[in-house]
Length: 188
Image (cartoon, rainbow, N blue to C red; front, side, top):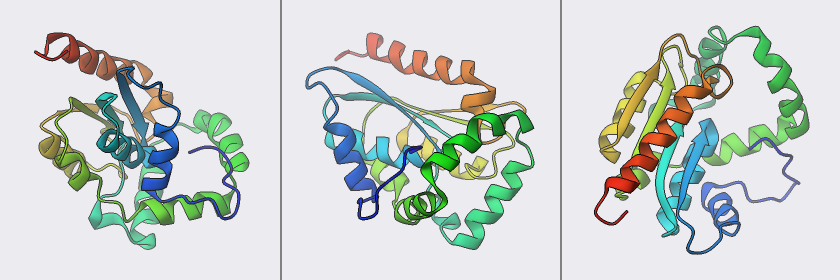
């Protein structure tokens, strides 16, 4: 998730979620926000931690129809065509720091996780946010996640996969909607 993973680090979703949950202050209600490959991790963290009260999934991955390397690469290339060149100034240092081997190992571990099945077992408020030009978090996959979570789907106009960089206000709005739903729920 943007940091180097020493060789031997377990990068499967369950292990990453356990590491994330260990950072929580027990008893503090949390809204977790994931982007791309971190979406399965926050979904799994919500499945194992009662402290998670809502999720915002931005450009979520692990569509079972796109788990092969050729399919993932094709989606990435089609999405990259819609990204703004200025994003490279932010992304390239992160990719360099993470390293190609770590990125490949991470995606290899995550691509088999069934985000949809894990999400369907939860009863949290969920916001799914994607760019209309995102070919990684496709419209169909994102709509499926919205349906199984009984959440909300927002498609950001002119956005690609990197909407945290290009449309941060859409993500803030999604967080606010989840937070507001907590204040209006009978248990919130």
